[in-house]
Length: 256
Image 1 (cartoon, helix red, strand yellow):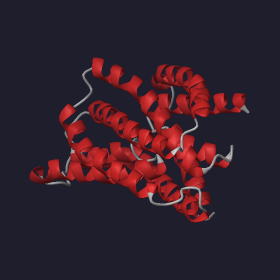
Image 2: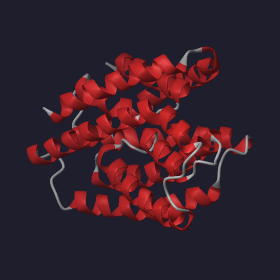
Image 3: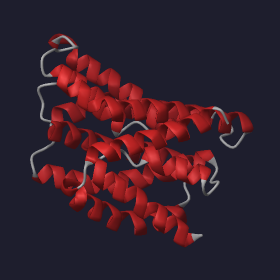
Image 4: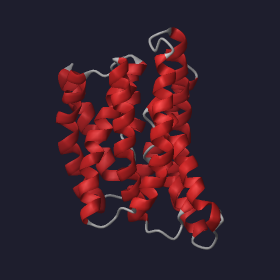
């Protein structure tokens, strides 16, 4: 079984390196559907996994000057309090009850379907925003904080949203920013968010540390290889395939 987790870690790491789509979109559903890990444990373990793997991304993007720290601070101003509030809510319920399991699965399914749409529509959105601005300038900062609040709650509950959804929303808010800056800033924000959410889950007892270690063994070489191949692969077709998988898994969880 450990070997299966290493392979899963490698595949998710490889796809994250290749496409930049958040690992939560892939890792949590894999843990749920293929390994039958309890939903709260799948989410909690994946959050700490994400904080470790994405911290590597901070160094890479930081060196290239791809991080706008003002955007990161605005997002974190909303997401960190929202994450703490979500953890406090989870403390009041039995996360292993049938009702909680159904809620987490349903929320995860919806998040995956929305994420798949975000992955598919990103290129079209960027073309539209090259000629048109959707958010008036005076509302951009407050909208960024609101986006942080939404991501904080969603990521803490499902571990999904910090990657594809965050990037797509930031493209709408900051159409003049380079896509590399958007992605770098999103990754930089995802680290404190997933760390706070992951530590919150650890305080609830919903983190499997041996599973976390096993996933990291596979994912770190996967991210390295995927990142180096990203320039040589037709990303458009990978995005379409990835979106199809996310829609299928999302519908399966919603209808479960």
